[in-house]
Image 1 (tube, one colour):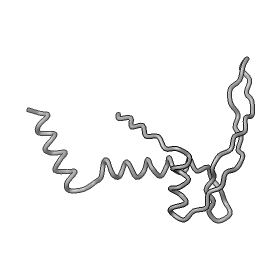
Image 2 (image 1 turned 45 degrees about the vertical axis):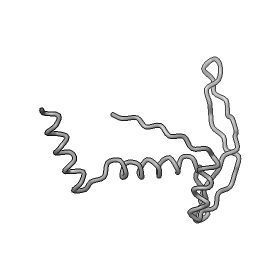
Image 3 (image 1 turned 30 degrees about the vertical axis):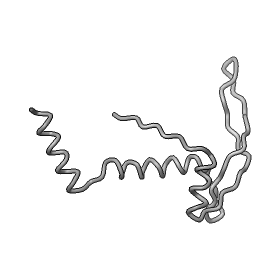
Image 4 (image 1 turned 45 degrees about the horizontal axis):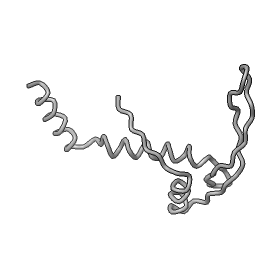
Length: 95
């Protein structure tokens, strides 16, 4: 398993979507967070949302899914070059 951590700011995520022609707005959103004595509190924060066809989704969640899929295709592509590299490294590790 490999863990790769990359951090993007909210402004970078917003500019990514706007640069690709999507509308991004900052709105208030809430979530339940753990509090003291096994209780939870509802906390609201301002977050960026991407809009498409009168629907919205949090920009950070959408960006994470897109970035993960693109990184997987970039790092581990299925191609003839990859096949040759796998065979070469396989043989090298057996030596």
